[in-house]
Length: 210
Image 1 (spheres, rainbow, N blue to C red):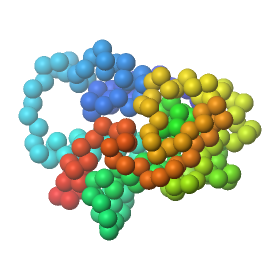
Image 2 (image 1 turned 180 degrees about the horizontal axis):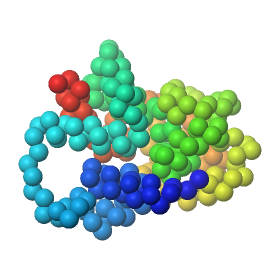
Image 3 (image 1 turned 90 degrees about the vertical axis):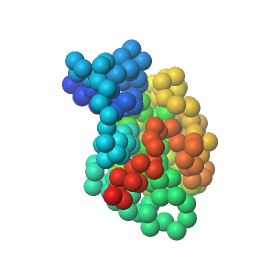
Image 4 (image 1 turned 60 degrees about the horizontal axis):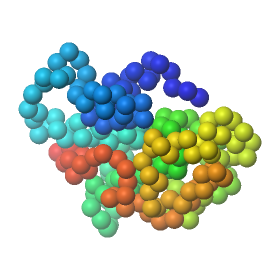
């Protein structure tokens, strides 16, 4: 289930444009070329408008979870309706509770696209039941694990050996992971400061509230 070269190049270009690594491969490119794409990437000194800054921040967040604009809008509307907490922090919490996001955080996948692919192809179970919706909301106490028949596939053998741990952020405190067993339990709701996404969520809120 490798990433195609064309898709990989697109992801790297998007990462450079947004200033955030969307894959481990993109991180290597950003380390070498910490500036935007294009012939003027090194010298661009444009001052963005407030709208452009908020738009870019929204795009950064959406790209890190790999979701469509319509989905992002729905998450924002739900976060805004929540009775407790700040809207921006609630938004991150909702996004981070997605099954594909937690498959990535647990180290079962190397990228969010691969995590989504694993879910769609029915390799992932929640509390023993197959779930094929990447947007499925995992609740505290629920266990995510790879189907027994899928464990023999190479991508999962690589994951079980801990190969992704060197390139992914450390497992956050809201997940209890047994990587050799390809099991992870969401022990509690994510807290914003623990979630390894690069985003000023208040700017995202301001974008949608405009």
